[in-house]
Length: 193
Image 1: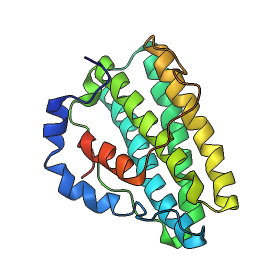
Image 2: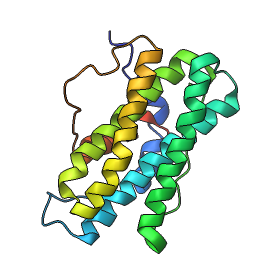
Image 3: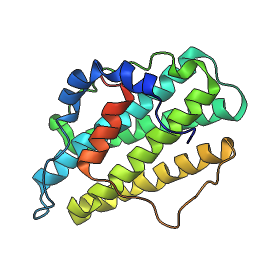
Image 4: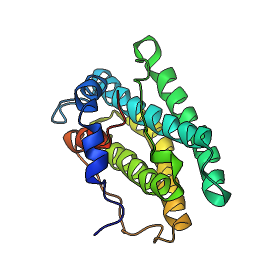
């Protein structure tokens, strides 16, 4: 069994959150990469903001729980700051159209170093793959801006994999996932309220 899969308990815990989380995820663009436009950029960036807010809140929760030590603690401290900066950057790009962060509930995920690390890998992978999947729908300016974030997201997932003894870059290219796959992956966490 893949130890980095979401457990049945995690998915069941999130069942109630699916409806509430769906509202936050409604920002994810539902398009089939039509002509690039500022409107499409905004739709993509609004969902990217949900991902960045989720990641920042996840690391803040882990730090608040106090279970992390050593390199995991250092990782959470640094990456939390990065994710907050990413969210701030996207909010600035969206201006007055930037939505408020949804609520999150991480339950006891961050009370155990192993669960924290497994979840961090999942969240960083989903974020990276979602950015890659949305890239072809962005205008050149928005793509250049997103590339500044996605490159750091790739470093995050490589770093956490290295900490837990996994191959930091297990594939020669990063995956790209569709909007639906990203939405399903985030819904499955049960973290969105």
